[in-house]
Image 1 (cartoon, rainbow, N blue to C red):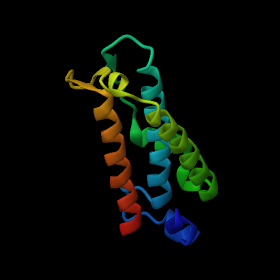
Image 2 (image 1 turned 180 degrees about the horizontal axis):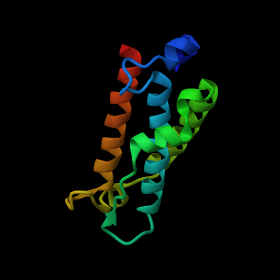
Image 3 (image 1 turned 30 degrees about the vertical axis):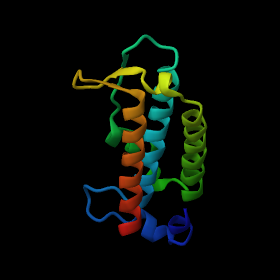
Image 4 (image 1 turned 30 degrees about the horizontal axis):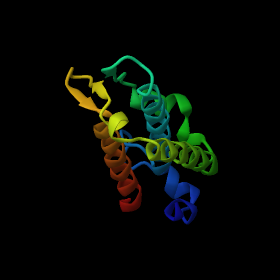
Length: 133
């Protein structure tokens, strides 16, 4: 995360407007997303299928975890640790497990392969937001 390490605290904490997240909060949101998706990717291995996806309140988690006032090193280390574990879990999947069925919040049925791809797309979207600001 070179962009983070080369950025000043004020740059990382600056909000583009009052209703938007700062870079610290975006990275914190990615921590929360990682935590929730690690739990999903893990529990789908042994829970009843289709595995029902539980939504989480993104804005409230960012506020509750107070990423805006947290040390960036702590947020970055959390994000790296969680994503290393997610990477290790993904490497262990095979065609059978990737086909495990999930029920999305709109009652559509998909699979673990979709969830993993969606997680990666979401991650890239927010990392690009951090890079562009």
